[in-house]
Image (cartoon, rainbow, N blue to C red; front, top):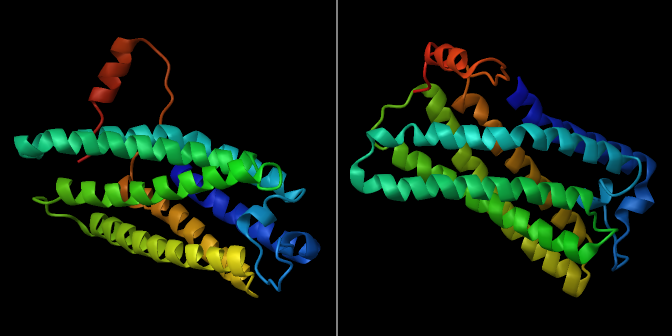
Length: 249
């Protein structure tokens, strides 16, 4: 349930911000530096006006909290599978696991950055943090798919695992194509001020955000029956308790 709420909370909040800003603050969220015709506001626009910015920042704060321990859960989950690899692959795979953790943490930090430093407050910093988020997000997706290919090369996967890998690949391809579209229409808007160019830029920005959220939502297939526990007690009792629990395979 934590994973489901963590993954879906920004999506629900984003939809709420879009609808309310579009209905009640139409002129504010459609304003661009080119003053051209625009029908789709950007994420920065709908989450940069008040009171939507407070809803968005609150939801991202709730979203980021669980994602940090989940990143380390993934690291431990992947490392537990190194034993079945050929010795020649262990070192390279171990480095890849560490890279995935670092990329995930930078992505989380960048998400917080673009949320709490809006484009209205400091556009140059907001833009650089957004680029960092985009690069780390795509690299994280690619590295995760590559790692799953290495770890599962000699393993028979069940339907749930196949579903997870299939959707990770689909969402990565969707993110790549959307990023290309975003860059093309950003250039058309920034340098040529074409009508609707910013709307297409915003459209691809939403696709990227949704694909990113759904990519992380695949955790429901990776850990379908695991629970996050916060426990207190002597270390000996804790070790004994955890030792009696079934391991993740």
